[in-house]
Length: 470
Image 1 (tube, rainbow, N blue to C red):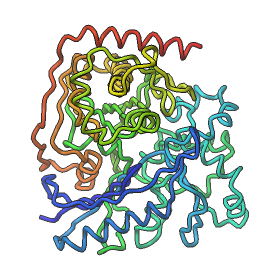
Image 2 (image 1 turned 135 degrees about the vertical axis):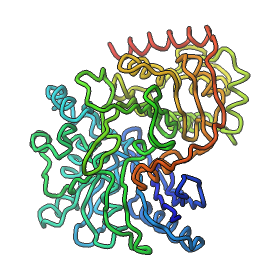
Image 3 (image 1 turned 30 degrees about the horizontal axis):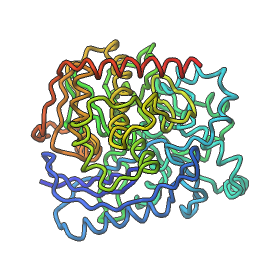
């Protein structure tokens, strides 16, 4: 049976992974990429470094594996955008990260249109998404402005830039899930929205053509492998175990934390949560409801700058077991995501400002759980859940998973496969195959009574309400 190649381009690394027809990991190669934090709002990456990292992991993996590769998938970080020269693919700007918020104040002029934007896109008016960043590039970057005058400008999500360079015919394309995160995409029609381009004063012609996530995209220049799935990383993570049972949601814990729940139709009232496209092909579509926590791994990175700790991850589980009464951390790292969508506000501890470093880190982990629980309560009003599947790097913390089970009252299953985005992309590339084998469950966390945790959550929730109302 032919293997499936997955290119997984994330915030901190690019990976190339080979999977068997049943979903077993055969081999993988990883290369780090840099994230440049100019300040609290401006966060960039080097497009050339990202591209070179992808080319390196691809070449290395394929050179040491002479297995027949039947197809490939590409999964990328969402909401990261850039500009490039449409003639040769030369980047004209940095890649403005999904975490970048430089367009916050500019977007406030569209506040009166927020309800219509949310209705059309399933997204709030937020600087995390592409429209504000594209406006910034058009207004502030002189090279982008000159390229527009010369009619050689290409704009779009990071995935489009990667596709231009990876596919043999250098196309200008984007999939439904990445197009959706530009804030310029009509979720009902799965097409660019002319009213939104007009509203944001963004030209439509430099943007890529929109395609379904599953289908024939072209062939990779490496070995002429057909690319049969392109999607955002979190969309792919939803399918790491194949089709998802109706009573289950997926929690992916990485730089950000995302709760994903599939639905067969758009909801009229998603209650501050996001709506998006889970998967699509030429004939059908599956929507998703999503909760977003900006400060997951990003909050730990923030803390490392404040209180550096060697080998932090190795110590966290021990600290989570030891510390019984941590302070309460108001986690606004990267801004509050769903369901509040609150802008810039410095993170802070409610009390215990002189708490030991380990207590502070436990408080930060608990704040991630608290933010997830706020979103889960909204999801439970839409559809009754009985269990959660967790993945991503932070899911390896037993103390985090147990707190999530205790607070939510739901069973939490952690599977052995860590690269949930890559595995889900492989499943999509294989046409949502029925031969997919679920990996063994690494650990099941059953909910326990935890009144102290519940009280801290209640205090946290009240403080967030005061913060947002103020």
